[in-house]
Length: 274
Image (cartoon, rainbow, N blue to C red):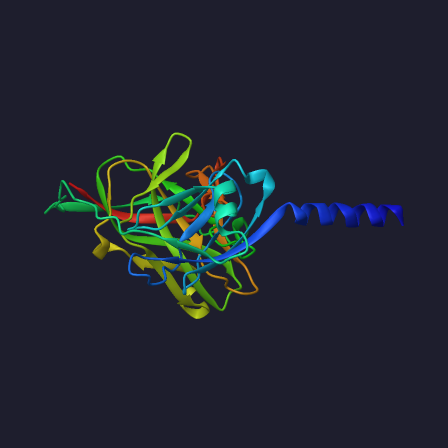
């Protein structure tokens, strides 16, 4: 009886120190922004806005000194100190507005007239060794490193699937610049989504990216991100030993965790000058 009472009191204490916030992300014209990354920087506390721009996030008092970031490709990120965010929007629906970020292209990279194609990344198609998404953690990402030794254009990506239990897949493709300690800034200039039915997925997800003119000068990181609740199920990718490293994170704006020596079956076909 005493143990049950203690547990009950601890639960009350925990929830008393945590606040749940609901809100909406809008653009400068007050139109809803879909699939915006929202999270506490470097922590496993985050989410993604819905197709209607709405979001819900629980913030514990232990995060008060941290920063919460709202970011989306093509928009200027907005950052709040958690304590100030909580004070501002306590008891009301949060309204966050993102301004469009106009990027001036100083240099236009022209595709070479004579080129060769090459597959970079991991080509493993194992059905016995696997890793992937088991729960619907919005903003969670997983992927593998692409070793780039010569400037390259991404023509297509291939992701080998070991097991898929979702009826429909809706994921975001992200390609990051690779740093010494993990993925850095996103190299894409527009969001790219995958929307496939279970029969369309089969043993591999193959997406043509040639029209997006994605240019890689150095090592990059190819990732898939959960941005929508897919319902019950799971998605596992083929994996293999001693391949390009794998990284993952559990929530939007969270820290990346590396998995050395084990690589997922993520690869890209790139074109390079002969």
